[in-house]
Image: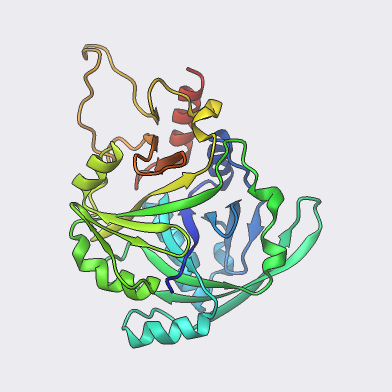
Length: 325
């Protein structure tokens, strides 16, 4: 049986502004938590899956342990180069067994690692949460961190009060990877996910999971399928978007537009004819945030495409401009 989506790490330089961005898009964002290796996070939680906003804050806590190297330092370096989606983490029922399997398939990046931290309930009371992780690596995609995560106190982590979002989002249904050569990453992703096979597409392939799915495609395929230009994955592959599903998403005031999509980005400048948009390189023009209805979904679904090199303040400012239209 394949592993399902557990969470996606969004590495940022300003945790409060990142939380503000998600809140302006209609998501409920949890309180700030602290890790013993110097990162802080805020959680956007759904049933069984979440988005982890992460910022490296306390360099004096960084050591040489596995979490310091594979999580804190990775996200520190990633965010120093560009805010964006840095890690894909799948659910685990046996992290120790996952680590052994990753060793057998030559994708292992660590033995199983365990940690606990304090969490906070909506009423302010403190609880203990604990996790075991097995890290994996795709040597052809150093921009992406991979791991599986086993929850040890799930009753203290998952909370229905945090899973109610004003925009109607109910779950993360897909994560999209853009790769120069999608086929070069297929064997690793099948070993990592435990999926039996990938479904071929003209521009890449989809991997169905027990919760959600992973789509891998070329930059051209990303532009064709999602209606926005894909990033050029200079290091082989990158996480480019995550998709949310849920009834009523398109009715939320922050996601209104004429037609079927909402776009936050540059406006038409002087001297450019109406209806004409120049080709834009997301690495040069990072202030773009697109939510687009997924054509293949029966239930309403929206795609958030986070450029590899945005600044959170710029994204927040761009979103606010569009919200005020």
